[in-house]
Image (cartoon, rainbow, N blue to C red; front, side):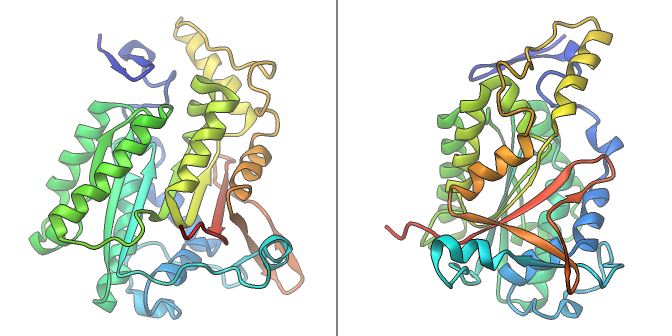
Length: 325
């Protein structure tokens, strides 16, 4: 039995991750390549690289590692019409920085975090003009310890380890103070360790994979909204979200019931955003100066949703306006 209290969240090992999403063997069931392959096939990863990596207009320069793009019919693009409706003709607000800062919110034990960051690092390593800094945050200190140990064991190239060393921190993302402090300290440490001048302390890319439901369950509609607003506030360029759909809320209680553990109030009366959660998340994010990246299949065909094999959408947003103060 292990109980770990972080902020307002109390975790009990007997829940086996089914109350807070801190599953101890998550990547045995969802290996990182499952998501990376989908992101490559639908064109979203290519879109991210082209927006962040110098010389990435031609993906043939990015090497042969990682998932292959198997379909040439799919192409990601920013919804220019929707963008122009509120911010005029120009949608791009950020160029390509010398350092790509990446943050994964709800990183578990870091496998997907490392896979995403490594994909970016391999791309920038080819141009020798950029570098990658990575932060992974999760509520479970045991998972964070595993993440830190796992990466240090897997890296065999000392030079790569020195240039690209992800930082993992335990953090209750329901807490505004904890979330903001973790991000602030990451940038402060980067400035001190690497002697980097960071003109704007924001992440080039933020990802939120299968974490929104747990934030929603434990902090309600207002808490989820504020969490998304914080994530947007810390993000300079791209925000990639994989929300759990409404049915996942019910399944969380089914699993707790089978384990004879106390259930959670996931009712639509309490969580009013739940029934249309994917649309509600989009409303919040687009209200923070972002626009959804669409997927073109053919010249006259377009889809809004890219879905994983487990039926969750992958929503990519690009910032179109930013406060310059």
